[in-house]
Length: 564
Ligand code: ATP
Ligand code: MG
Image (cartoon, rainbow, N blue to C red; front, side, top):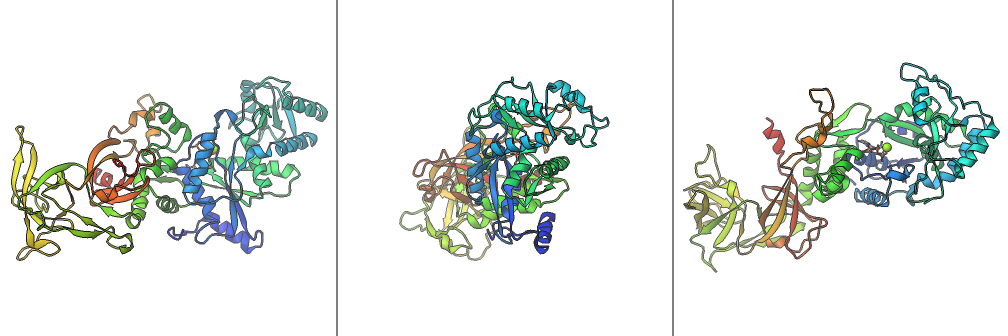
């Protein structure tokens, strides 16, 4: 992973200090997703941080665990869990040993809860959700003690055992920590750590009808795995006192330290699983891996490379200050990596027919061209020419603007890796639309400069007889608004983010591509010269058949230009 520059950050500084002080000889981090959706670009940042600390350049000795935080059985699925593991591996990271699950620890979590009850630090509460809210108080008002707070240890143990044994209805009782209902930190006001929920769990099936809450589960899972640095996003900062309280009050030796960093927010995209799920279930996109989705699987299908995403994560940085990043930064990183990774071929997306009037079979020659100007190891292919070729409609202008260097009546241009041609005649249909150009080849210009004049423009083209047809999907940003979920209407309420779907986010065209791409496997990336990077679709492209390409990114940032 030498592609990714290592930039220090406050977490690396903490680890450096811990190692220098002899606190740790090696470190253990973890990435703890909940399998309730596909991972998005924000998770990619967290993955690159947690795994990047122990893998790749300038890494610390240590390991990173992949742990599913599977404490909400209703929302979790195997499909999500499989996709998450695949995404982490695709990004180039290797987790330590087997995948772990918070549910692996349900028996220990239960035992620690019993210990807390025995110490008089937890009690069974019968307030319903509404009462619980009323008792909790607010940011400005202290809470009130639950009437069930002072049950005896024996009574609590009996009730908790019976909760576990399924004697009580869902939601009728909870187990709560006895901390402080007047704490300034609402998270410390006797938080619930167990609730009754008869739900089928993807791993433990129907073994349990009580499930532990996230805050309680997370710190103990970290400690059981010997995590040294537990990295999470800033919204958990106020939960840290609870993280520490739980570990301080149970008999466990390990006490990981939690550090918070800011969430990545990507403009023109959404970084919320819940909202991304809405796009999927409402059919606005074709699935979680639609190439327009900011999910890891969507970015993969679009053609982003793992190296590009890792470079992006590096550029996002790790800090506590706001991390709002424009989409162009992601595209820039992806483009930068593809520049040296992708072989280059020619394709014409919006063709206009060109007849080379003086083409002579057997006389007019062709050249072979390298797949990459700076990577001879990518090899070469023949670029055949024929009497009929296609060029890009945009590369012809009947009335050219000032400084035009491409095709125009009477003007000359070089065909990439071929001859200089001159446009002699423009053929139009009845409606006045240009349908064909008749051009002549300067036979002395194959691989040589024309004599006595300069021809500056070079355009891409393909031979009509040799090129193959391909379906090319031209993707653009999914939203027209930088923050689609933060726009307020006249009434001050948030406007539904689905109103800002970019109607031009997908266009499918038939393109002509050099035949050398014919046997490309799915997920093969190319640069189509002068157009952008394109990738054969992971699922719909079949080697040897009519290719299906997704446009990954254009060669330049067209949005920056359009927006001044
Ligand atoms: P979402 O809000 O999209 O559901 P989440 O935080 O609930 O995200 P988890 O599966 O719990 O999703 O996240 C796993 C890890 O990824 C957590 O440590 C979380 O802090 C981190 N993470 C999630 N979203 C982002 C983000 N936008 N930027 C950085 N890290 C993130
Ligand atoms: Mg979460």
